[in-house]
Length: 411
Image (cartoon, one colour):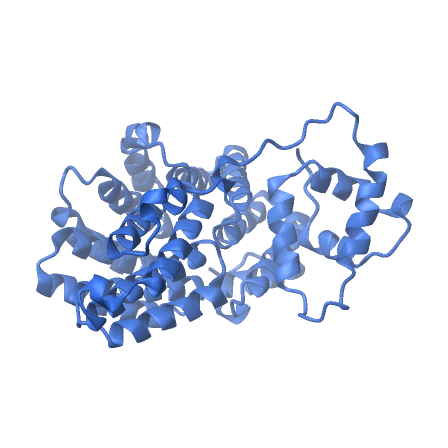
């Protein structure tokens, strides 16, 4: 389903108390058809509204939408199929887990982490279950009170990280604060400390607190180096490189990735792909599209073998950037829109908004100034809904001002 209503249109729709026949039928069609992109945007609109329940009359709007559904949808319209991910996980329903135990918490945490590139709703559900189970565990079963505090810190950390991935940034921050409080009462496990530092750094990246993210991640890097944990050290360095990329320092990011790559075990294919993928982005941001294109093509077989939908979306995003920079604007737009739609369908609004910024630059190169104004406005609303200070997003304002003044944005 194409021609999705914008966030502004959805906001006006929800505020409407008009007679059903006067409602925007295009919006109603999208919502009643279960359009995932529009449902994601609707969640953002609801998240950014005041807490006062009288501020918007949602029930009236949806009642109106239901009233006109018979006129808009044919009787043969298929209802969205049930989402298998909404079914309870065996880990949370199996009778062998009737009692809260550290082993159960560990299994839930491992299962949640395994979903980080797959079903993000399931990742969050399993993490929340682990957090509840850890809080219900007894110190005697965990090996003492400090060990129990460690277990709770691990579970609250995974829960906070899962919330961050789902773009619930405020809730993520509170959960990670709780994790840190438990860690402070625990055994002093350096691996736990390093992991929480990485998770807090990832949240700081989403909030665009990039200097703080670098500080946190460097501390994690130091801990992993002291422990001799080469794979964890490499992963932490990759995240450090990503922060430098977002901060506009791709040359520094390349140096960090070149230190990370020799540490990665050849069997750790996901980590190798992540490092090389971000190396391509470095060349793109340095204005070296030919090198980026050559590296990207060397990774194509790895992308084709990859079954993780989020990695494939990021590959499409990267392909769009490269095509944009070598002048193939039509194909670049298709790749970027494919990535953006995929992120929004999975309610990954932060990533979707970042792709929107890249689309804005593409539209400038194509001379489509009207599209710039529309996408910048929608992106700004998205970041505000996520609680991100849009003053930290320099390109957002530059694109708007440049479009209004008819000039090239200074990036």
